[in-house]
Image: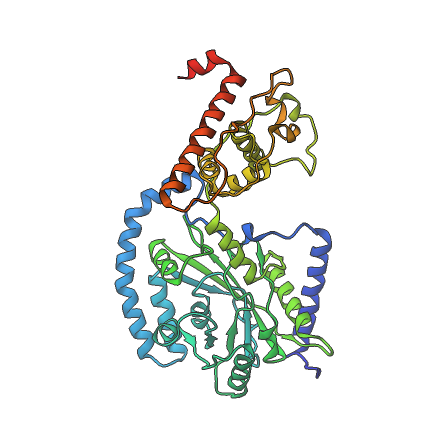
Length: 451
């Protein structure tokens, strides 16, 4: 690859200083990288009781601000459409956005901003990061996903007109950047938003294939009462919360231009810019990607709330060390539920019971599925798995009577009435056997007391 020099010698020296500080910080604190649970917020409201009380007291004022700012926001949009892109328009828009609660600050003086840079690389925190940077300097953010047309234009995105894939998108962006009269491109290599407090996602390499000189831009966002953004919120939801809270502060810092060195690959350049931005923001550089966020959201949507089942704590558990292979609370709860089903239906394999419990999460539903034949299994003797049942069955207890031999054979009847009658007979026989086994195990007096 050709060697491209930076703007000035001062920029190279500052870049070396930042890289040296980055390496020293990494050597001093090599802690583990955070996971998706810490990079993305799933709840909007605060967990602190005092903050939640303050939010409730502020709610009437926030609703009034929301309605007023919706009316003013329409006028701001019309003014932005009427005025041409110039310094006067950016000043007017910045003042009007401050009325909407969007306060923008940048490093003064913004001497780090390079006039030669045609590509800005920024971290992604909210759905309006490109609008905030556009209040400070003229730039365009291309639309990558989402709706096109009027919605795309009204949100301030640039339609490059490429729908064939990443290769065609890169060619369109290279052609756009080759024209000197076009504003610089604003790209977000993270490709999705984070909470901005813990770490940066792994940068994609395609934004570093357009030009060999990029300008890093560090964004930090703060707001009172609620979180800045949540993982699954749409831009409309974020806009309403922005109008609801009293203010949202955007801090923009321009870093020196980063040049692609000789024989440096795109992956190495992306990693270097990611480390520089992480050092500037005071966060860590992770290997989590936008695809990992999508998987994290799927797990959150499909995670069913488990009923609360307290686990008794043994006296020796406080002093005994926890082994890596010790069962978790969820596994212990499933084992207890499987044991209850096994006591009622001893001829059902324990693996079949646990598999169905993992889906139903209910003892009664699993017993009904097994009795009604919804879950296929091969009957077994109750004595085949004594060790898996635990100490609940005493060794001195007399063996329970075998399952009734009068169960109808598993033959598929020709008529629906015969099949229904066969199923009912099997259910009654299994219920009678389960009742006898319960009586033999716990005694007649206990069974009478439970009635």
